[in-house]
Amino acid sequence: MAKLPVKKLLVTGGAGFLGSHLCERLLAAGHDVLCVDNFFTGGKANIEHLLKHPRFELMRHDITFPLYVEVDEIYNLACPASPVHYQFDPVQTTKTSVHGAINMLGLAKRVKARILQASTSEVYGDPEIHPQSEGYWGRVNPVGPRSCYDEGKRCAETLFFDYWRQHSVRIKVARIFNTYGPRMHPNDGRVVSNFIVQALRGEDITVYGDGRQTRSFCYVDDLVEALIQLMDTADDFTGPINIGNPREFTILELTEEVMRLTGTNSKIVFRPLPADDPRQRQPDIALAESMLGWRPTTELAQGLERTIRYFQQAL
Ligand code: NAD
Ligand code: UDP
Ligand code: UDP
Image 1 (cartoon, rainbow, N blue to C red):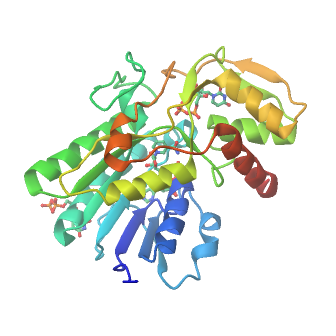
Image 2: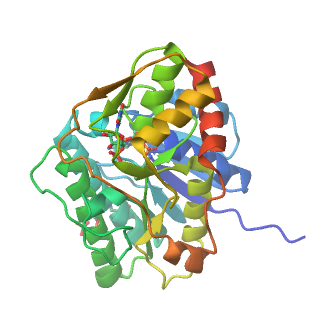
């Protein structure tokens, strides 16, 4: 069988939750992987098992500063992703999305690399259409506590499309919906990690608001598969493209599922809903199905079991 060409790939944010899984999969496919991370939310522990791999290289670097390397493709994932982390230093969050995008696009332009942006369902804000399809422009508060993330990611999308129109950079924009799995940060405040950690420790499970708000949860392996397939699409396909699991759950349903699977004695407590918390979120993935022939295959219970096993060891 003919050997596939080895590509030199850059993964920014590669020591984070999604990035570490992506690095693993790209190495397994036979490529050279350069992981760039400033370790703000990610850590060496996530990629420790890759450090000795002959085709893996780790570089500590903040993408708000220029980066001169030679690569064929760039997966731009660097950015804190959970509200607790992106609101810790909101100015740095916007800089990471905006200056980081400019630098990575400048790099892509110079070396003629393909570049994929990890955008987010947050570009839709608190949406008034349901489910959200790519043609929807969103309803985002430009001056609230979530704006550094939402508007930063929106501006990054603008930059990607301007580098494509103005400089013919080959771009791919993925709008990622809530994703979960092993290596989520235990203190990042996201709902799946919070509930599992609370359940395993026998602490109260904190439901914000009345728990009737919805989210649609995608298991990390499904997500990573879609990102790789998206990078491999023809040059004339730019996205934006929704990547997520369309199966929608209320936060209370998620609570019940985590309690059942962990067998915890924890009790549910209700806490105030954070500002600008979207009421409902569900991806329309028709475009991903038709363009990539992709749909997620991991059921929530199956993905939660694997994530619970990870946290049982990590805690
Ligand atoms: P994460 O916090 O685990 O990973 C982000 C990584 O980026 C970390 O390793 C962090 O140290 C690094 N980083 C942050 N700022 C940096 C900078 N200035 N320079 C270099 N590295 C920097 O989060 P994640 O869940 O793995 O998210 C990865 C990407 O996917 C993010 O861009 C996020 O916005 C996007 N995304 C994630 C989700 C999700 O549900 N997990 C949903 C939508 C979008
Ligand atoms: N850049 C980078 N690596 C490169 C090429 C460019 O980090 O290999 C940065 C560079 O510092 C610049 C940004 O990307 O600030 C945008 O580059 P571009 O060429 O688009 O713009 P210009 O250099 O003309 O401002
Ligand atoms: N949430 C919750 N309890 C928690 C953490 C989050 O009820 O301990 C809720 C949160 O208010 C939101 C949903 O779960 O409605 C998803 O929150 P997360 O921060 O994981 O993701 P995002 O809001 O960015 O989609």
